[in-house]
Image (cartoon, rainbow, N blue to C red; front, side):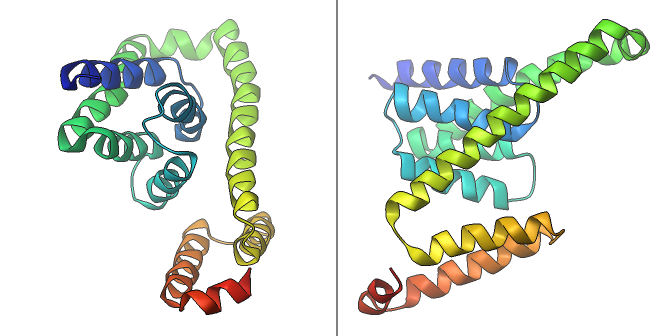
Length: 188
């Protein structure tokens, strides 16, 4: 694919994803996966999972972070700029319009019901992300990662800080990567 066409595809894909994704940043991740991993094959499943983990861990909105990382991975700095523009443009326009009519939107029963219905769909999409990431970890057959997955899930259900869990798991991952390969094989 030619560079110019790739930039246009990156921008339009990001714009479309952002314009039609409701429910927060986590919802955009499985849709990005479908486009950039399954449709265009620009990223592998593992790369997408790694980029998602970094986007989740970095400060800021996960959708914007993921767009920057995916764009950079695919087309460098220009790709990052293009995808972030495509990602922030739709919400900026939509929120600007909504802010003009906020009182009417807030009081409208139909809008309220639509938002409640969309919330149910958002839960399903986020659950899809969790299942795909857990499946990818399971395919690696690394006991350490599977145990961490379960422990972190239980800890978060018990009210543990997400930031603390991410930092602890990052530290464990760093320590694991520093182990000689033979010792890592024993943990499998």
